[in-house]
Image (cartoon, rainbow, N blue to C red; front, side):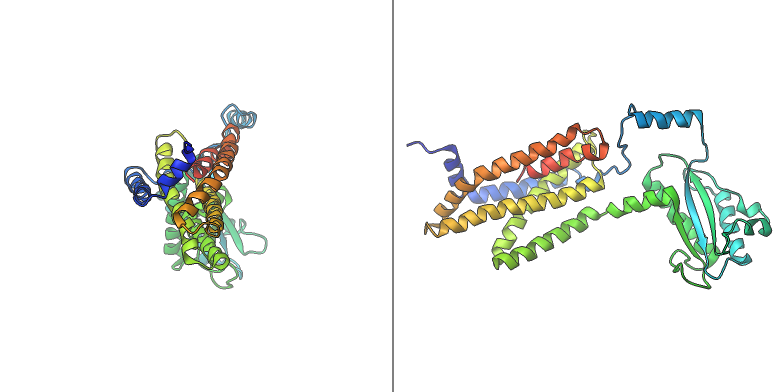
Length: 343
């Protein structure tokens, strides 16, 4: 009787020589792709638009800008605060910062109120009613890259530190006799929102690996059974990252830090689940067959079909996101579906 293709494939995967060939191929593929192509986290685009230009809301926004132009730009609100109240020395420091910003404008800066040209009496009227807070707006061009804004905020912090003579950005806002400074407004929110996901893929990767490892050790009480799924998923991530990286680098897809972070968790969650499904079948077969290789072949034949169909179902379901019109959801489609495919 002729063996089925699945049985032949199972024997090849578990052969004394061929199994090492398979491992070598994965190692080689991971190494070559990592060297040749950029990692996916190097090709992030975190300010990609979520709606197309012909969307009604975008058209309405463009019409508003055309009919009611506003050249002031996007503001960063530099907020000065002292719990005991702002005094003249504090106001002079604020004026000096304003003078520096006018003399040496930041990159993509459009304007800032000339507070340094106002008499102290006029500046005092701009302070809050309780005398503790003053807001100094700094305007930038629209659609400025977040990296540029972040660099500008670092420059502002240095300028403020020079004028105040201490790090007011690190001062607690409840400090009575020290000036505290913070940046808020649209620019501050944009920079903070981006920084929330910056490096999150690495942090989530480490946290996910540790959590899965601990859970597997507790459940199976076997270091080998705990490490094997992580190794397999690790190779899948090593191959997937440069593939997504080159696709994004060529401009065929757009990836952001949010999609990469979620993809990492999805990859390790599904990958570990599939590995444990196979391991569970293998342990059941060991109770029936004494030959370990035959038990693995039986387990592979019994579990591979369910794993493959489950994986393809998830891939197709996630790929359906590609028809989503909202950009944030559309950008999930390729990374999420490809993260399941190599498993």
